Image (cartoon, rainbow, N blue to C red):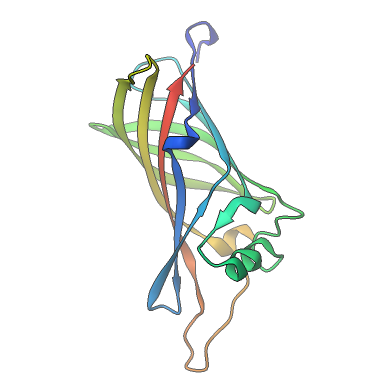
Length: 179
């Protein structure tokens, strides 16, 4: 990637959301989000292929609609926010797979566990907003296994049902502003 033609984009946090879904008791799904995050994209072309993408979120900003659950997620049973305050992602590959479709591969770090993850990205387009800012939108989806990142807390009900699923579904709706 040539630095002289590099275009930098920063996330528009007011028009982006970082959410996740986890099965609870196998019968229902809990949705959570991170309220504080930052991300950048660097690209040397208009179709974003081979873009360099970085993302970081504050674990303390987790919100699931239940304060007790949020505090449990921040505890050492899960994220251990006091010792590992950030979750980070750095892309290693961003390849076009179809019309507006991409495969995003990169290293996700949670609790100092670094694992390669593969996510799907759908390009929503690029437009100029009423203020003259160029914006680009993406929806990024995928699944991870929380236990691979040291989030190993587990409990089983009397009937033998797992309380929290190992699989976590990720859904990021993000809008970037061209610098």
